[in-house]
Amino acid sequence: MHLSASHIDRSLPSDRWNMIIKNIQQNLPEINIVFTGSAKDSDFIKECIKDLSQSNLLNLCGKLKMQELLNVYKKSQLTVCVHTGNAIIVNMLHIPTVMVTIKGVYMFNYKFNPNATILTSTKDCICDPYERNCNMVKYKSNEYMACLFNISDDEIVKVIVNKYKL
Image (tube, rainbow, N blue to C red; front, side, top):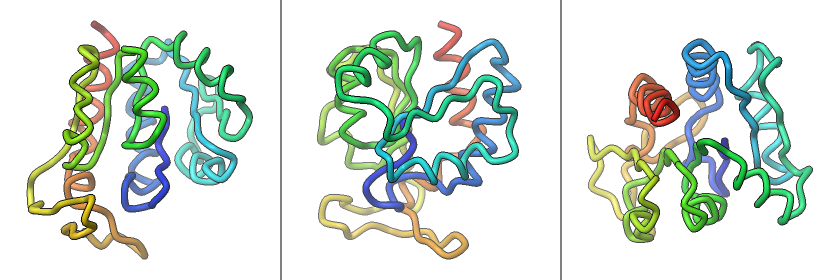
C-alpha cells in the first residue's frame, strides 16, 4: 500500500486509513500488507496502523532502493495507492491496482493498465485538481480534496477485497 502523497489533501486522513486497513485485515486475514513510501511517509504510516495487529503489517517507508521497490511491486498480488509517482510505476508494470484518487487522475490515462481499478468521487466536486481549484472538505485540522475524501471507506474496502479475490 502506498498511502501518502506529496500533499496531505491528496490522501485520506490516517484515522480513515486505519479503519480501512483494519477491515482489510478482518476480511483477508491471510495476506501480508506492505507499506511503501519515502522516509518522510513513515510517520504517516505509523499513524495509519496505530493500534492494529502488526503481525501482517510491514512498513518499508524510506528503507528501499528503487530496484528493491520495483521488486516488491513486481511480487505484489495487489497494490493500493493514491495518486503519486509510485502509482505510475505499478500501473506501468500492469500490477493489479486499486487507486484511491483525485478526479483529475484520468488525465494520466491509467487505463493503460487493464488491471487497475480507479476510485474517485464526483459528489460535491467540480474541481480541476491541477489548477488547485478543488472543492475541499474540512476534517479535523486539515482539508482534503472532495473527489477523494467523499469515497466511502466501505466502498474502498469492498473494491480491495473483491479485487484481491479475483
